[in-house]
Length: 234
Image 1 (spheres, rainbow, N blue to C red):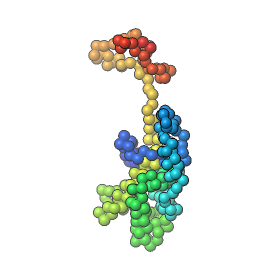
Image 2: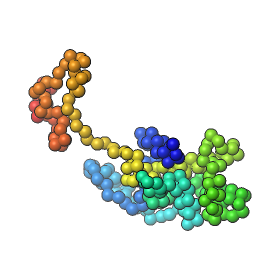
Image 3: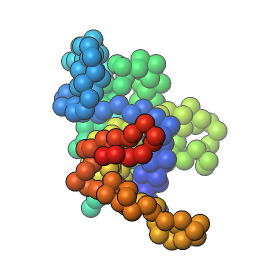
Image 4: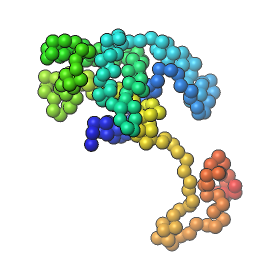
């Protein structure tokens, strides 16, 4: 199993835990769904939309930092035959938004990006952004595998874990990311009653009078009605 598959499985298992779950596009996307009183489509208030717009108009990373991040996120989530690279999905823009939305990320993220230059200078005598791909990988390998990393790189490992989590969150909260995971969300299905083999096992049967009320694709929008005695009437 390659690194991309490991990340895919890791993030799929983290959806229920609510990893960051913030949209990663810099442009405001249309939101469909229920309109709540006093709010906006999907439950967004005017104050929340104004705050997001303010953050999206600002920027945290320098151009040099963005170049480092573009290199790193494409190492974590490269393109393949099934989906695009992280930079194509604007994952660095997502991270920039998160730095402003969650300021507690700013110091560790910027510290890690500074460490890259220190390590690059120590090993190769030049800044990180001037390294070859092989040289970049040599540095990343120092912190990408927590179980194998030298204890001296403990801080770098924690930083790379943050970077990896943000990359996965930015990637898998895009439409392309959802499709790559095969995530369909809450999809209506069809129920034709209790399976016959289950009924046979317990000596039961589906009442014929209810057959017409079992959920069918064409009836998904209908709400079942009950009488006072708990019988389905339509």
